[in-house]
Length: 318
Ligand SMILES: [Zn+2]
Image (cartoon, rainbow, N blue to C red; front, side, top):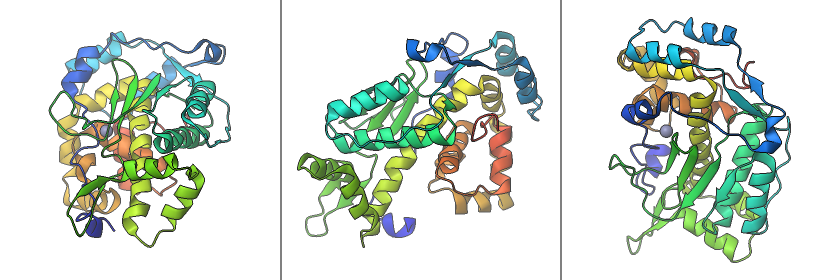
């Protein structure tokens, strides 16, 4: 499906702009604040978990990892309801209210009702899969501009650790479709939102596109869901296993050696939908997390690398 789609949907080289230096700059100086309503149900990670993470087989203890261990403090994760029922919002205010009431998320959706509903549905799915014990960002922003991150790369989503915010690029998240006659490229996300603006319900549009004879429409929905879950994956990796996270950054070269082994490369190329996973351990973990959330079976080779990179179990602590 991907090869066929390559000609009609642009597949960005990277899902988001994560850079080691970006994280390094903020390392150790981050604090996470929780909405008051969640503070009475927070959990602390115990030191035994930290030891377990360190003993996970991450052999290189360099400057980064030494710093990670030294400055590690017990942190809090959010406990949401174990099961939340997704409710489709009929307007953008309802969508913002759903995000705030259920997850304490400030949702800025640029009046894009379809994407707002999709974000809420994915957050609900991830939360339910994690039995309500997870990290979700303080804010999710849908941007209607060609998102270029500070490293000059185009991206369709980004998790920014410094302000605990996920940015979604409305222009590219669902891919683009080229009109055969004119060659004009149109954003599938805008197309979807246009249907919502004209009164079609989120569930109807989704059903129509999921059952569409055109694979690009099915794939557009997959891309949106996957991208949002991927960014939530970064958020959880960073917030729920800081030690494993930083150790994986420090072991970037070992990661590259591992995934470039022919037998591993073959498994990865069959499993992942883009080459993004190969960029660094952070992208590998976020993408694998998104597939775990979607219920896809994870090959044992990928599961092993995921754990070695500090990827958290789904559900958390299972
Ligand atoms: Zn990413």
